[in-house]
Length: 229
Image (tube, rainbow, N blue to C red; front, side):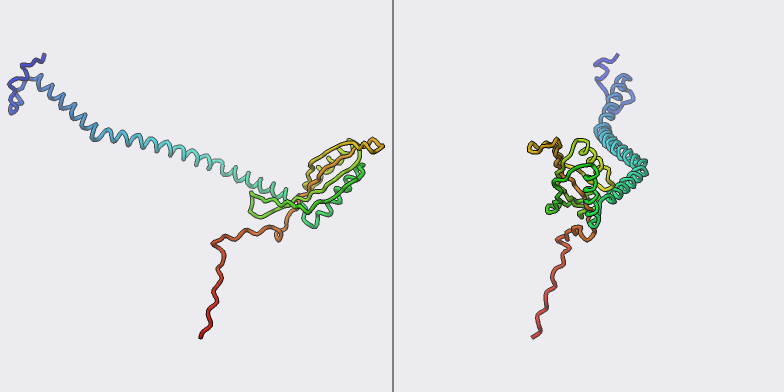
């Protein structure tokens, strides 16, 4: 047991003769002080650095997983890109050129006659041409809408036959604002269908809007030198 008398009359210059219990207490205190100093001046900074490196490790792991996924799906993405480009090309080929628009209008008119409909109005409305941009490929316009206002007379069977026939055309033709009603002033039982048939014409290269010249790319006029005196 350690008592107060063990710490009395201790000679600092004669440490070897100190009581063993006192030596043990002092050694324990010295060890604790050394450990505390080591933690304060070194270990705690290492722990902070360890937490920082762990955070970096998680970021690197996430980045690695993303790159690994991209690498594993790169071939599939290339195949999908080719399919998309092929589909776009196929859809473009379904748009008539300027020379083919008249032929397409004739086909729509013939489909109306073949469906057994009576024409009351067939008016192409090209004054409000609506050009659309192909945002997926470039900045130039690639097609324009050419609407045709129609009003025909017939029955539901004839209307359905006409709508189905136009939808099955190899060219892209859409139908909008369909309205079917009766004509109280007429003596027959026929119905009237009003609608807008939309043709999409492919723009030739010469018709596409040129890319706007950037402000910095504009050439400055060369100043004319003053005549020599």
